[in-house]
Image (cartoon, rainbow, N blue to C red; front, side, top):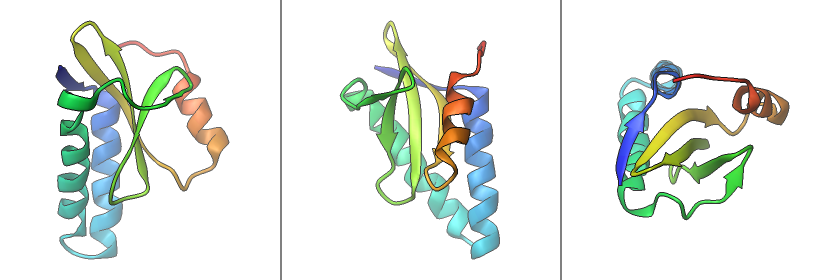
Length: 101
């Protein structure tokens, strides 16, 4: 399975990096390493995760983040990487808004 990180998800990762880097120098890099490891696991495990708002949801192993993706053909497209600590209504609004690639 191919994995593609779409622009919005890439921006989510950058935002998460910035947040954690402010908390402690080097923590942002650890955040990215951890999330990319989780995303890389989609090469083998795409499609086994539960569905929320029409997306499969992979929960990160080390940070309170969720990776939302859709399988289209032989590709798992990562649409969002969201902090699970935010208001659930905000998550729902982000995932249900109309989007284009």
